[in-house]
Length: 123
Image: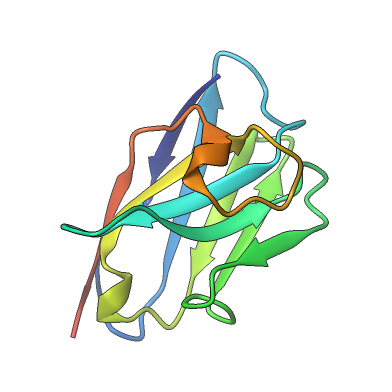
């Protein structure tokens, strides 16, 4: 399965963005999914994960209460709704499929990394 993240852009602090992870080649509805981000000079950081059912989620401490992950099975996509954005949210955001049962927060437990999408939050 090939993944592609999209929806990034430039937004002011306090604003919102909606990222989408789309799959090509096959459906990924039976995969647990994850979102990660990587800022320049920093390690890849866990953002959110979603059980394949869409009924369970987990978030990184820095984004709890501001980001929401969900999936649309009919569209074969996973979305990351980002609200109350902060300059420290600036990073390239990636989606990936989990290799191990939910929940997983290590990027070593994920595969099929898609091309990321840049999110820039200005102060």
